[in-house]
Length: 168
Image (cartoon, rainbow, N blue to C red; front, side):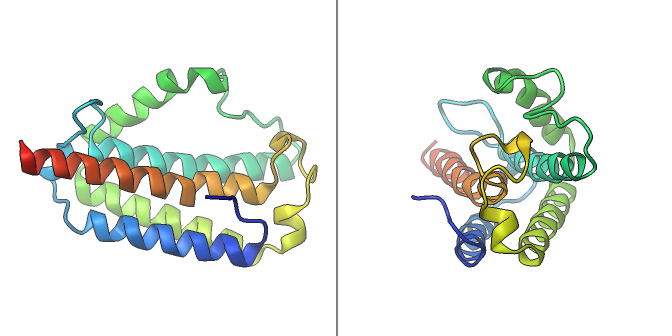
């Protein structure tokens, strides 16, 4: 799926992919939230904790950039090729957090990211080189990677874990 190139398209893909994920999550309770896919031990809880955290990271990057502080992308002390180690702690924390608390935090993060996108204009979201920390990507592309792209991959993973459990 091609990346959005304007705010209208970004909001549309945000809403579409989040609705699909929410529909899948409707079938998940505390017990099912510990399920994982056959080829990966990450639980559904871990996936939701991860997605929530990364939406928060987006805001941190943006706020640090606007304040002209150093922006650590992806995270301080980590490179993109070290995400497996970084994310492991997020998954573990998710496993220790009650499901309803994870869902509440996830919904709050989704609302915050969507409100952020709604309040920006196309020039800020889709002009290259507005922020040095975004590199070749636009701010809108970072928002999409933190939200809708993560919603799609979470939905795929969670559906796979649920299907596997039904067959199991």
